[in-house]
Length: 98
Image (cartoon, rainbow, N blue to C red; front, side):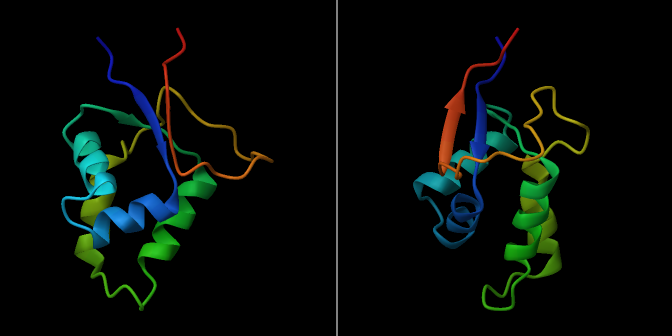
């Protein structure tokens, strides 16, 4: 059985890093463990990286790099469109097409 497919917005990713054991942290850990599959597009990934590297958060480069362990370095099988006119919904689960 394929793991469920999730989209995580930037706020949820930051919350995961700031609130150990919280809901967003648990979701990120599930992705790293392979229990869910994260999907994203290039603008989202760039936003994740830019926000996590802001000085106000104080995350070191190794911490930011380790967070990206949840994101498969190869193109995901469920790629999101490059632009979406709808605002991000925070966390959203969907079923894989296929």
